[in-house]
Length: 293
Image (cartoon, rainbow, N blue to C red; front, side, top):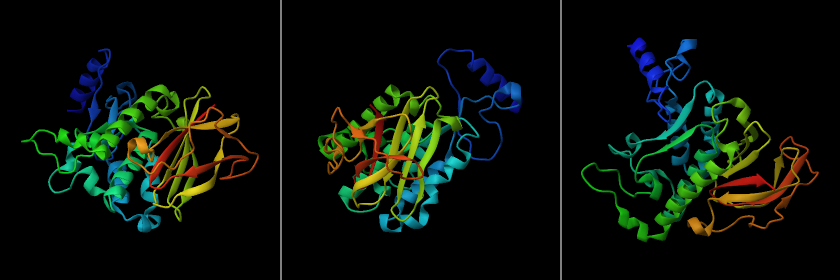
């Protein structure tokens, strides 16, 4: 069987634009390693551990998330051991598991905000992205193979806002090579803040290996943080907000940092172990992306 899989992947690899992906949840080594090194030769492997850990975290009430902080960071310990794909598949929205929106805690506003923040976290995280149909507009009920998708929900601006967000996340992902070029290599990722469990904040830098960078920061509580000092890498004089999941355009409260051409100037004030920082408004239950100017 292993020889067959290797041969299949070698043949598929000769077809331009074709890939193979392994839905595999064991610790079998080298699933996405080349066959000439002894691997199975799949292009990507589903990261089931990441999916399970992060969804358990998101199901927690924000007041309790400080006790589960490592569920969002643990995946980075092994993130580059395979070419991973981050899967939110049909398996997660059937058989009583609830829809993605239903998994989120809080009232309706918080459910949508949590889901938008999670999608932002997912798109900023190393690894390719997979959503199952209906998840891109926050389907309320579980997926049902016997029914069509509830497209009528898009008449509700909250659902349309999630759809607009997924579209814009994909656009950002394509346009900024730092978010995808080194998706499966450790050189494409650096933590800025991984241990702020008290405030449930995560921040990191994505790199493309040629000097381009994107900063991602997540606030997984409903408490906005105005005047937040965020440590930033050297080599940039100002940063601008490129995407904010709390934007009113997506259904959020519109706490943010504007789109001014001048951006946010870098200050010689240490933060997060870095000698430079910027001062930002960190929205509630949101993920924000910053790019250099």
